[in-house]
Image (cartoon, rainbow, N blue to C red; front, side, top):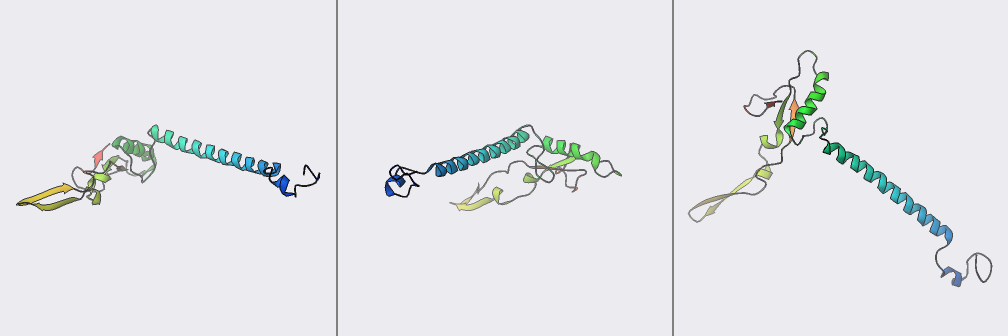
Length: 145
């Protein structure tokens, strides 16, 4: 209400006093909803981090960081797989099985010889997958849990 006229704030003097109470209330409601959304998202992220900290498997088809993690996941699913043939768990480090650009080496001439340097990581971080039997017959690739 206008202080001079006693009506709605239509005069320039009243508009310069600041935002109306309705505008302030609307802004406060938006701020509270934003904070509530942030709290819900943060709680969800904490649950995911806690689940991984407990060593829970990441899920089917996703590489585990350790062989023990892959074997744990296999043991969890093995009773439900292939009832005619017992599931004997094997795991392989898929990140170390094949070469890729991260492990690429560069050989250059150096004076009267050559020099080889690793342009990426010497090795990718471990990533273990499991299967009920070795998928390949290559020695040393699949390790029994």
